[in-house]
Every structure is written in structure tokens, then in C-alpha cells.
Image (cartoon, rainbow, N blue to C red):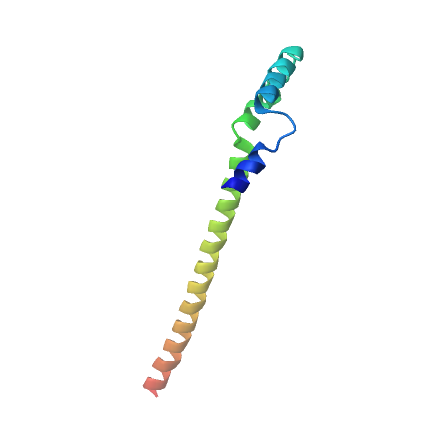
Length: 94
């Protein structure tokens, strides 16, 4: 704990002086020091609609590929089952 305290206190400028400097800097430069970058973005970028659309598209593609893979697997298994059943049925008839 003493090491952490000494590291915290080892500053080139005291915290009060740093706070005063920050306030004075904001007063000297009023045209954008405290302005938010959202001011220059469109509503689509502000609300992250492009990110949500991208994630929704990827989620849809993944679900669709899983669905089609399972469907193809079931179809494959069904064909094998029918083929096996037909051969077994023919063998019983003879």
C-alpha cells in the first residue's frame, strides 16, 4: 500500500494545479475543447445503426447456414434410410 501511495504522489504537477490548468485551458479555448464528437456525426452513426445492421446480417447468415446444413444432413440421412429400407424390403421378398 505504501508503494501505491508513493507512486500516486510522484507527480510532476500537483493535482490542484492540474485541475486549475485544465479549467483555464477550457476557458482559453472555448471552440471545441469540451465539445463532443457526436456533434459532427450523423444520427445513424450516433445510434450505431450501421453496427447493429452488420451484426444482424452476420447473425442471420450464421443461422441460415446452420439451418441449411442441418436440413441437408437430415435429407442425406433420410435418403440413406430409404435406400437401406428398400434393399431390406427387397431381400425379405426374395
